[in-house]
Length: 68
Image 1 (cartoon, one colour):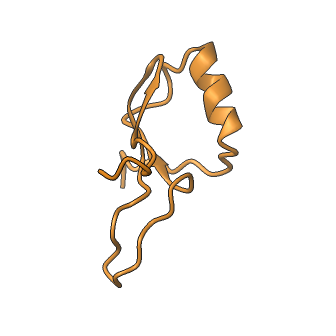
Image 2: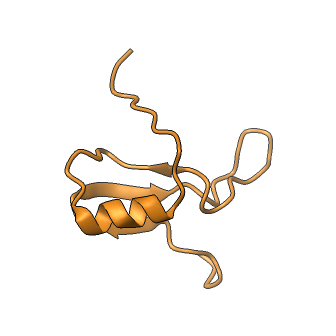
């Protein structure tokens, strides 16, 4: 990863495997912008510092992909 590229992994208490998906190439050759799409294995264990950090990201939509 380029030194000017933001880190993908976010260390948030109670939020395992939280990552910024920025930098990934799309099938049409474009690149996902950093700070726009995030993923995590779960949010239900988020502790106060993690909740504050997530609020600061300006998230407005959560998709739960565990079911049909």
